[in-house]
Each structure stands twice: as C-alpha cells, then as structure tokens.
View 1 (cartoon, rainbow, N blue to C red):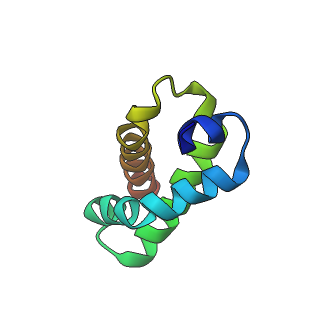
View 2 (view 1 turned 60 degrees about the vertical axis):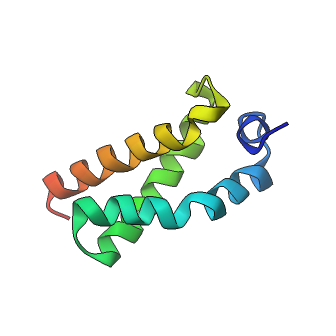
Length: 84
C-alpha cells in the first residue's frame, strides 16, 4: 500500500512522510506565486493542512502531487488577494 492510500485510511505517520517528501517542492511552488520565503512557508503549511483535511476526496493515489500543487497555487493566490 502506498503512502497516499495509508494516509487516506487515517495513518498520520504516512501523511507526515508525504509532507517530508513534498515540502520543498510545495514551498517552491508557493514562492513562485508569493515571491518571498516566509509567505511561501506559511502557504505550504496551509496547503498541507488543507490536504490533510481533504485527502479523502482524492480518488487516485498517483494524482497526489498534482492535487497538492493545485491546493498550493489556490492557497497562494488567496493569500496574495487577502493582502497577508
């Protein structure tokens, strides 16, 4: 069983491993939108919280990264629009 499947089944350690695996890439995506490191790290944290809460909506395990990037970009845009 893959990490995404385990995380969907409620395995917090599996989700933590996913965070470790993708954190740098998500910070980089967020930085591309936000333009500064602190905002990018905040956006990445918000992204992983949203992903954790919504992982049961993910249908395909192999689509995790694309799904996560979409959350990150949407979160970054919202962050920029709110003027944080």
